[in-house]
Length: 167
Image 1 (cartoon, helix red, strand yellow):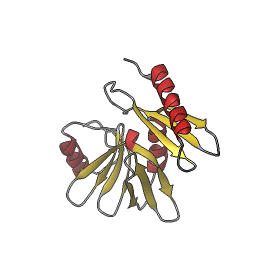
Image 2: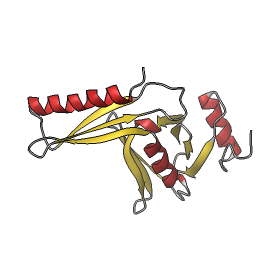
Image 3: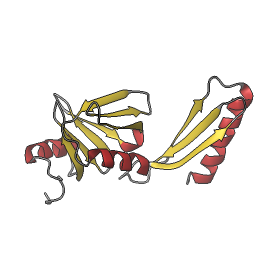
């Protein structure tokens, strides 16, 4: 174990983290939470629960951040799940959280449509991965879309995929 691999994470927590992943990891930042540590890895946010570690890939987090008023790190994943953990002293974890989530975004484009509607297209990559395909998402803003707006949003998605996806 290298001196800087665990970023100060206590040795027992580091060992349980590497055991859970089945590989050595690099902890970039961490903080204590109610049920155990929360660690920012190169490729994921690791949250220790009462029984085991959970891993949320940075590319899966669509929004979130540090709420200083409540002392909570919060996030929403691409499947709509909202989570939060109470953290004592967050240290560098909030800055790392923001940097890693932003680093996973390869393309983000807002397409303005008629009648106050818009589509946001985002392509994300797995950090620390081995060249997996980009993960694309299209989010609708401003209410329900009519057929023309759906077609325009899907055409924008197809254009960006053709431009950025590497076969």
